Image (cartoon, rainbow, N blue to C red):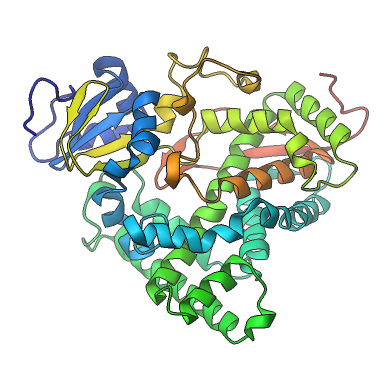
Length: 449
């Protein structure tokens, strides 16, 4: 397909580097400007790579659901994360992805997920017992430790909090793909200090994963249980999963399985800390639904809690953009997209688009109450279509459980900046601490909604 007038419009870039400088200065402002000046399907270039931002919900639905077979994760993602997760579920394609998805799905069936809730509640309960009235916490560190603990207890059946290797590797990955730094767009083969640290920490993480596998394989099969680690080890022993596929999947779940949920909880706490009346509403719901202990049966009844989480994920989506590559010539919103074009689907831009959201910068959980005429893919924090996040239900259950457990005992207020500086890397992370002051629940501290 030749580039004709039907190709999406976009800004003229510099020779060789294209629009990379503007992109690295402020990726959110760059995409918002594309949307406002060129439309919700717009083109740009990064070091000679042709890319299109796709920020229209209907086009996003076409890519993720209706015509999903015409799109794959693409070279941009696979090239950058190949060493860490290349053979895992997140990056695999075609038959390899389908086989792995089928292999791992039992660990995420609803009945199985319900058995994880007691551990989620216990972990959050242990956290709460360590707190005291008036204490100030750094919520991102707190939630990261909590979700890591939950992940180890539920999906892997081991304590992964005693070893800092996962946290160190997460920090190295964050630095490697920080879009505010020009070098994040350079090839990872270049021996920059950031790349060298990334490779060093990745090797240690891979060794840690190999040790987990060896420990589980040393157990008799009938004594292993049915968590995700045991499922994967069993497939390796049956030669239905290669060692690299096993390792890459473990790294995928260790990294994505705790960090995105920790960030979701962090941003939900950030929003609630600035809206004490909403905290009171949630506490009333939790008190009415939960009889002193959060159970799996309680979670579907926590409707307002779900709305608050959805609104926080709208404002601060931990995964702030998806990548796809057109595997054939396609048409999106009337534009001709040639085969091989990199497509970027930015949740941040769509979630804050005034075309779909009234007063989009404001925290308003009521947006998610009842039916609306808003397009379905105006809100897609977990993706969509066949390749939606396999851990979506797990993450939602965990966020509800942790929030309900905390709010049963404590309220909190924000003591740091209301709008944190954000780092757009593999995930959307605050650049500094988000600090909350804890207040033990009492009649004196209650706010009537």
